[in-house]
Image (tube, rainbow, N blue to C red; front, side):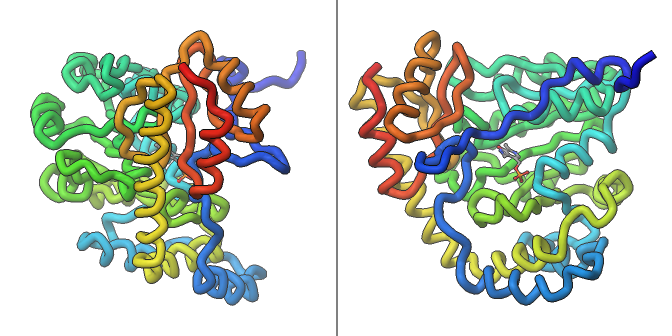
Length: 348
Ligand code: PMP
């Protein structure tokens, strides 16, 4: 015979990274367009003197800082190498072969991959026509095999949010032994007053967990650190399935320093939010009909023209995320980057 993976493994797609090129404006990965803050870089440089040692596996200081930031207990925090790894921990700790994980589609690309790696079954519930989660359909998709529900709000790639009232109604229909994870990777960019507040829901419901990241508003995508706020028993399980020493000392130190730098970071987030409004308005002027976005990106339903519009943008030196036949997800950049985007964007 021949060496090969376990049955089914070769059917899994490899996660595809947003495109980049040396002279192009990269609006393909929902990154923070601004360089790291000086004080954060200083802390990383200091920490670099200790990279001959393993990091603190328990991330005790960082977890304490995150807990204080949210007003929860450190035992309710679990960290990982980006929130994508924390999402994987949540899946691995909750679901295995024969179990089902319910989430909306289209949503974050990694969800179906993580579920299938765990050997569990993804149950993908189409978004409503207005690009929002169809929570009634998601509740109806729950079976005795369901172990986990993933709710992405603001949703990647559509930017739509889940509202408090509809979410409370949804939760009332979810069995108490099913964990509902609210992935709030983009929460800092959300200005919708009706959006759910994941941390508040975590406090009020025993089966809700929240996923946050330092990759977006905090601008640390390259250092890979994210966290869950989860019931203590779940948080402990996440530590059981985590890769030992996954979160580097550099990442832990930078994340803590970023919590200290919140007001400087918030200014950048505000800039992105105002640029989002400007880009949405300009895009609508070109005849496109994007829905409102609460993320640091906008979603254009380009349909059959997706590849052609993506090509036109690339020709103008701008790289975005194309979902062939469906749409383009365009990250909001600095004002200069957004100018290049608008200069290259064809009309609808
Ligand atoms: N959740 C969502 C909804 C995302 O869009 C992303 C990044 N694309 C992640 C989680 C993971 O980000 P990270 O691993 O960098 O924290």
